[in-house]
Amino acid sequence: MFPRRHPYLFFLLIMAGLGTVSMVSLALVAMTVSGMDTPDDGDKVGVIEIVGAIVESQTIIDDLKAFREDDSVKAIVVRIDSPGGGVGPSQEIYREIRKTVADKKVIVSMGSVAASGGYYVAAAANGIIANPGTITGSIGVIMGYTNFEALMEKIGLTPVVIKSGEYKDLGSPARPMTAKEKSLLEGVTRTIHRQFVGDIAAGRAMAPEKVEAIADGRIFTGEDAQKLGLVDRLGNFQDAVQWAGELGGIEGEVETLYPEKERPSFLEYIMESALHLWDKGGLRSRLAPEAMLR
Image 1: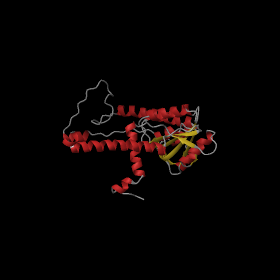
Image 2 (image 1 turned 120 degrees about the vertical axis):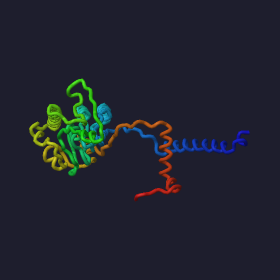
Image 3 (image 1 turned 120 degrees about the horizontal axis):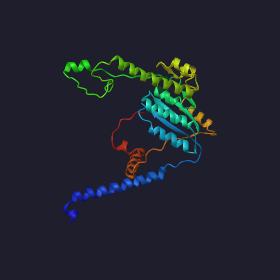
Image 4 (image 1 turned 90 degrees about the vertical axis):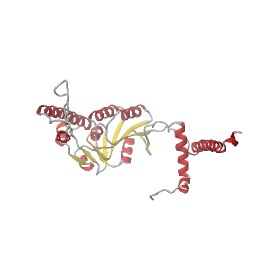
């Protein structure tokens, strides 16, 4: 009776059921054809990527710890493509790399840019390799904010601040900075700068005075940084992997291992597998127009 009373609904239910069966079938085929990723028991070089601004450190710290405790990982490459970031996260990653080099060799590979906090992190490694045109250096500390006092007066806004201490609204954009406040912030900046210089000197085994002489915020190319002792070698990512493999005692071709990503749910895996087969078989290009660059 149901098919007769609701023929269209019945048809949709049948199609939905067939679609589900098809998606599961495609996923099973994908698992059979491509197979699940299985770890190799051979020795490897672990690769950790730091890309973009350094605003958090926990993920990198966890990855370093995991590779440090993995007996199959003989050395680690940290690939940096970052203009820098927060002081705290940079210092935390620096410390974790310093802890790691006590057990395993760590090589830093610099991409297009590894400056400021990016170089802070790199200095902790056993060795640094950069491209000749990599932008690095920028050893320094900066604080800044915008004062909106004139704009607020123009539009008729009057800020009201109630504070418990003289410096509680330090850096307020609604009023000029006092001489005492500026002096306080300059002291904080000098302290962090001293920490920056000291950690680079320790990590690179350089005299603090030598680091201090170039720690004025200027940037360097990878080629110039090598001449100054901030970089050890010139080369690309594959050169860094090979170097790390040699330091780790790996003979022959060096295999790399990246941190394990969060596994997708079963439904997500089915959808991804089905879409992969859809693209691989060229079905999408036959059924729908799509812009292509070749």
